[in-house]
Structure formats: C-alpha cells, structure tokens
Image 1 (spheres, rainbow, N blue to C red):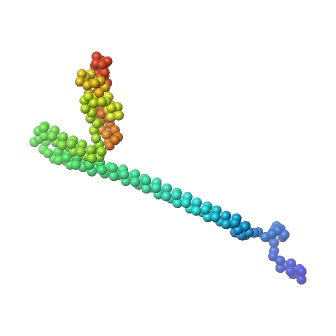
Image 2: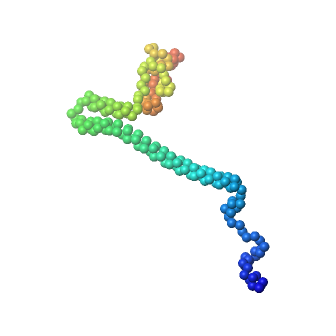
Length: 199
C-alpha cells in the first residue's frame, strides 16, 4: 500500500529539491501579507505615480501642440504681411499701366515729369500705409547719429558747427526701426573752415 501511495505523489521537476517550498505567487499575494497601513500607502504611491506619468504625457502633448501652433501662426503672419504690402502697391502698378498706355509722342516733357510725380506720390502713400516714414532733417537741425549718417563736412556761416547743413540722401524708417539713416552733410567746426570739404 505504501508503494502505491508513493507512486501517486506529484512528480518533482528534474534537478529540483523535493523538500524546497513551492514558488510563491506574484507581488499581489505578497502585498496581501503586508500590514494594512503599509499596503494603503503603497497603493497611494502607485496612484500618485500613475497620475504623474499621465500629467507628464499630457504636458508633452500640449507642448508639441504649442510648437506646431507657433510655427503655423508665424507662417500666417508672414503671409499676412506680404499680402498687406502687395495690396498697398497695387495702385502703383495701376498708375504705371496708365502711364505706359499714353502716346509718348503726344506728351511734353512737363507732362512726363508730372506723370512720374503722380506715380512717386502713389508709391509714397502705399509705403506709408505699411508703416514707412522718411528721415529728412531740416538744415540747421541737430545731428542725430541714430538717424543720420555724416558723409561730408562743409563750413557754414548760417548754422552751428556739428548741425545738419543739407541732406545728401533721404533716410527711411519702418515704424520705429531705422531701415536706412539719412546721409547728411554737417557743418564743420572752425578748424575745418580752412581745409575745405572732407568726406
């Protein structure tokens, strides 16, 4: 009888220790054996960890969306700016078309000059609508290195040394940004009077 009962025993794995305890279940069973307070703390920490991971993933997704929207907004702003300038210049093109349709043989020099002035004025209005303004200091005004570029010195008995004598080339600003300073001739000091002009 004993030999029959021995045969009905569960076979052991090859190389295994017949006296070794059976393998325990995963951590769930181990957690069940922990004190109640400790198990609750572990569950709370796991929940906080999961929430932190979810919050991180949401933040990354929001940041990627922000980057994409920023690129799209920048592209739209560039296109809007170009469209604004082109629309402002369309009347200038219209004036050119009208001028080219005229019979040059029937026009006097004065009429041609008047036509050029009309186109120039239309161009100036279009650029002013886009924020362009001129830098054109008056003779005798103070020299401003932020807006003026001195290209020549000349003596003058009418204006103070260092002031603007006349404008060599008009400057331009776009809103508050200097696109090109005005090139000016400034009044030389007394020690330049005998030396003539200098660049």
